[in-house]
Length: 85
Image (cartoon, rainbow, N blue to C red; front, top):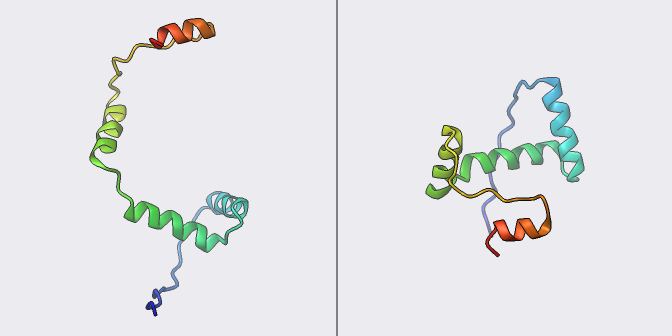
């Protein structure tokens, strides 16, 4: 038999716009507001990105531009050719 997870009630002050948005998002997933917010907080608190992801995030934030060639989307044929396929 598993031990019950202990929970404690707490209070936060949120803007009415944020609270309305969270309620809307929870409703769209057929979940309670409490469950929805708890899952978001658990994800942020316990799911840290790996080193590759952290490096990619830092690269984007620093404004570096990748040296990847651009894809020509002027036509399907041009796109395939520019992708090297």
